[in-house]
Image (cartoon, rainbow, N blue to C red; front, side, top):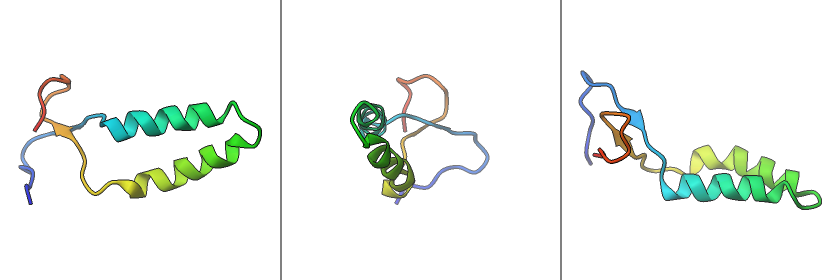
Length: 64
């Protein structure tokens, strides 16, 4: 498993899962009682990650 250098500052990048989940949350709000599904996605989403995309800079092209 890759570890991060504790002396550096890292920024969290957006993954494909992030974008799809955000689109699903917003899309569900347009349906009747979709707010319940949106709320469920908001609650479950933080627990769905086993890995996170990080970068040493805020530039989207620089990823580690």
